[in-house]
Image (tube, rainbow, N blue to C red; front, side, top):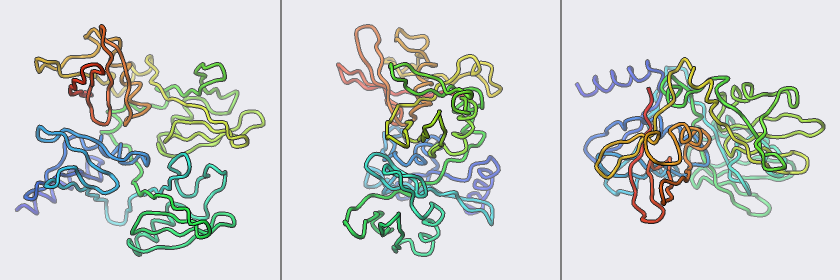
Length: 341
């Protein structure tokens, strides 16, 4: 009977467009984690080490590299279930001097590897504890799946590897992040410290076009030209790099308040904190210097990051991965939540 119930649960999850499930176990029973699309979103980012969640009235940190929690008696697993004949889209990443780079993309020295994520995944499927060699230019490298490292066969330099699924947008994730083609503004930091929007007449791509590229692969890269220069936009680090001289600029993705309110997907998510009396209160209705829309804009840029704000005489930090608010003076920490319609 339990197997039948489990099969029905998986079939229902697949029908809803979700092909994964995160679970925790205390040694007796595997329990699904509520709102696990938030975990999945973080897990698909190659730069994310882990995430802290609230589970059964306690805080649990999930280490994405080891798939372990900080509690010895609490285990975690990610189940993947796809229709027969379909395979999960997996990205393989190495840590170069600055960023996590996907195999097949350009590294910081402007060289591209001779293999792609698909090539690495095929080797991994054949032997998950094995190794194999490949080349980049005149250099030879060895990938060791047992240690998840990449080694330069000449210099001996070793870099870490990460294997992460690529995020698939479905109805649930879209309702959480309010994704629309024209609902976001893409900008880079100009020479005078002013955020400047990408315009089609300058670089052939405007905000709507970049948003479509981002939704195809939120951890990927996109190349564009402005006059005689070529630039690489790195969505995972939200940075723009001049491919010729290496100049790096910050890039951001912010919700367009006008289009977001008119979105067919509903109103903007509400952000709340749990006050000292245990009641959940909207930031929009509190005496803080920020509103739910301010928080949501920052969250869309860095879902695993943090932001600071002031209220009365105190400074606070919001931690999106832990979903907490911390008073920087008293260190008091309160729970935070994000409500979607």
